[in-house]
Length: 221
Image (cartoon, rainbow, N blue to C red; front, top):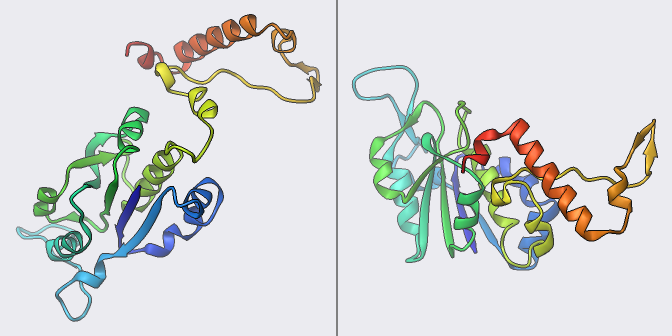
């Protein structure tokens, strides 16, 4: 998979791309991630990418030319363009799973007060990571990169993916490791029984109880 990230602040991504699972996925050539500073694509000589809004109002609005030019320069026939915006569809695990099979993703990180409405004509998906406001689309882009990359075949083991939260719309079951007893807190006896059928039943029961208590909305799905 190839992921291109259009941003005015490429240095914000240095750590996430140079650590842990994403770094290993890049080194294994399982994913290619490119940072595109769309300031390089503005037609204005002073590097300006924003301007005051027509009709008045506070803040500055991203001009459409830099985004249009950048997309034209990097888009492939297989590309899907994603705009990170507060009024997009709320992101979830199902969306991550559907996007991990795409060959090429282009993520547009907005900034300042907003963006010229005509930029929406370029995109295939508009995505929000929640009902709150951030200073820009960089952090949401990091969320997508992390959640999608880890699902790509070969990045992490299939078994690890199958036992995670949100599979089958259930939260993950509790997990424990050594020591068996710590400060009077004991590991549930069933997990040390060696009876795999009982362990699987216990885990499913715990998933149901945890989901019902913390996220009953998931059970409705």
